Image (cartoon, rainbow, N blue to C red; front, side, top):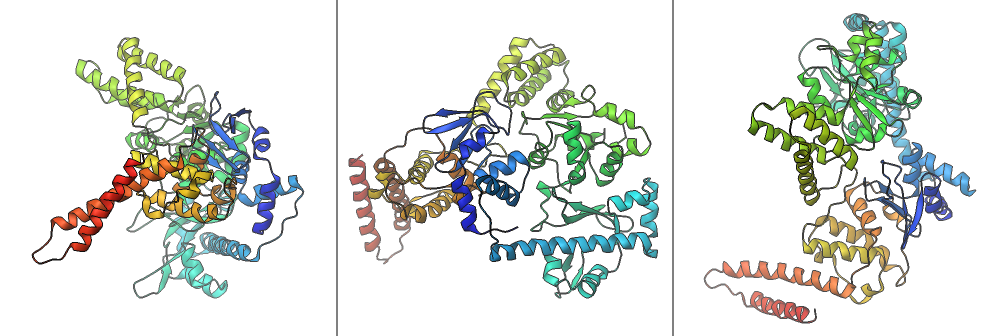
Length: 587
């Protein structure tokens, strides 16, 4: 449902963000802001800053941030409309429909509807068409009876170039642009439409709410990729989709575990064994998928093939991260077997045993064992390389006790003294701290230079609507970083409408901005340190801006050709040098 912006802002104004956070986690006053134990990752010391006046929260530990609506979305696994309705009921506010927003929502509904009709077409084709005989044979070979095919709405796409297109256009009156935008058809060089999927077994993909958004398609005969997925569309984003999550989420909560397998057929086989399984939709399993799963469980087991390719799949996406808030594990499967094989052959107890807490291996331990396996531990130099590589992995874990335990683990595995190992981990941790970049959930970029720090400090002054800005206004040209420029352009018109010193309400402006600008501004808005003087910050930025222009003019004058008149540029250069000196004298 799409609601009027006025009502959304009424709900925002009627809701105390600190009280909302306090209903979920522990909060305490800290200076201007309130600090809370972050509910999005495991921690003992509060690292989430909550600013009720500006309507923002930001965790300096994991990077999660946003406004009150996002907080409810993330903590209660709701979408925006559901979160808004919940808070409106709580505040006693009647919501009204926004016709324009409803029209935009209608576009999403039309895409979902088109995908739903495609599912019906492919499913009916699989069940009855003569050309689907090979597909039916393949599915029977996997042990899929009619109930399974119907339950998962499996289908078959005919080999013809326009079979689906003709059906949707003639029988369902779906516009070409909707079919194309939904990823169901493509356009050739002559501008004619043709079906994207042809001659394949079709596995419909649903989002978290159960809406049909795309397909995974398996080739049975002929040339082409074995699996072909829907392209990125307004409703299909593979980095934030997991096949089977719509069916498995309730069981995940009940059993306290999520199992990640490699393919659609594995999900279906394991799901029939009442094990909550999911698979990615044509991309590596990574942090975005963990964000989905952590809403429903704290334990995730990766169950991939027990071969080199499966090992690579288990490690891919986690080379530079250790999700310390999740118990992320790897299941030891029999060589050459995958979860689907075990489920289809009736070896359910063997599968359950491999997935159990007792048999599965923590991902970090698995990574360490894989790293050590690549080195000759009987050779001193090779053992040294192995220890350094392993120490780099252990150092990324956020918990000191866990790092110590893995140092003990490595000492036992390699025979290297524990003290030496802990020193190696400490060195690696210090090096990682010096060169640390934000985690995948925190797109805030730390300043890399004095100029970048000054630009971010000026943005902090804008976020606070500091009274010193009145006499120290800058233009967007003063910012060297493109992200800083975008942030300035977003804030400047808002600050210009406020009285000096009035606190800007930032929740509606940047609370739900998931891009780099939003993450940067939320971080800067909630940094708990005194603001620098506006005059000093503005002066430093102006000096850098002048120096940029001076360098360009000097480069231009250095390549003068014969007879060229550069008197204007020379005069400008002298003026800039004088202006720069005046600014430095006032420092």
